[in-house]
Image (cartoon, rainbow, N blue to C red; front, top):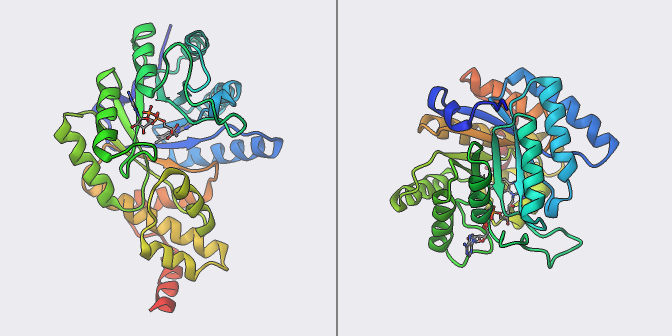
Length: 310
Ligand SMILES: Cc1cc2nc3c(=O)[nH]c(=O)nc-3n(C[C@H](O)[C@H](O)[C@H](O)COP(=O)(O)OP(=O)(O)OC[C@H]3O[C@@H](n4cnc5c(N)ncnc54)[C@H](O)[C@@H]3O)c2cc1C
């Protein structure tokens, strides 16, 4: 068995890491899109890519299939996501065997959400109720995997309080998770506060910020409503002012992400995880502008929108 490098080992020698997240396509057009995007993303050489796992195991086959394709065609180091909702321990064992056969070392380990067509299905079976149960199970079965877990700078929507959510996060880490990737956020202060609270609780693993460059006001409102993140009033005002111009909205999203990431990197984050929604161009523009240490070249458009607002 030959497994790739663990993210923890990567972090030990090469910070900050850049990773991008894909989702497995459902249609032929989606399949063409992911391959086109992956090819373009090669240009920015992410340290690894991750690939999501559909609610209730709905993309069970496709997550690994596309992980394999993206690895074989483009040479990416792949981290599959795995959720336990709807799965038994035997299901998980089989999936782990396949992940192992492919040589993938890292797994983003999650509880997941109920599938749309089965809202009652909120956990796995055999006691796999929370991500911490999945972490513990994988640790027992296959201790050589490096496990990441999700963290929520603005609290998971189901948690009664931030304190309770942080205790649950600590438990996930204590069960054997090696790093945390955060939910998307648009105000860096939320991330910094979250990291401070984690450290105060004794959560000492790397906490990688997750950034989703906004594509449109409509899209960001939808995502934020789902995951409980806030849209800063200034970002909303910029997007509102550009609401009839899709390209301008995307540029505002890239500029906002650029500024967020510049500050995060300046303050020494261990890496940045980009939620790219299988889209390439804005990600490439963003990363290239960050790598060259210059402002996003199309910032003039945002300046124009800001002037209109003033
Ligand atoms: C980086 C990242 C990647 C993601 N990838 C995917 C994906 O590929 N597929 C997908 O379907 N979804 C994905 N999600 C979304 C995620 O599945 C949802 O946010 C889900 O609602 C919670 O998953 P979790 O792993 O955080 O769950 P958990 O850690 O189990 O937490 C869920 C809720 O239960 C509470 N809780 C945790 N442990 C306990 C306990 N022991 N007792 C009582 N309450 C507890 C927590 O406070 C929280 O409110 C991702 C999210 C992030 C941030």
